[in-house]
Length: 75
Image (tube, rainbow, N blue to C red):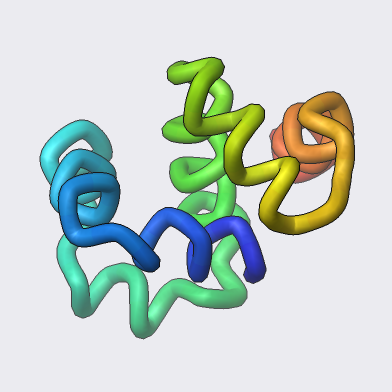
């Protein structure tokens, strides 16, 4: 997922993701196709608007598209 790549592109953001979600690097590696892991990444972005906006800009999508992706992953 491109959003995860963006988050992991900056060490401070990556560390914040791990601290706030409780995920480990192994969880991220093994859970790339897992709805819960991907949802946690999108929750992380949606919880901090500056990151959401910056990620959306870097990925060439609207912030609402990232938020919408999170909603589509919900069970």
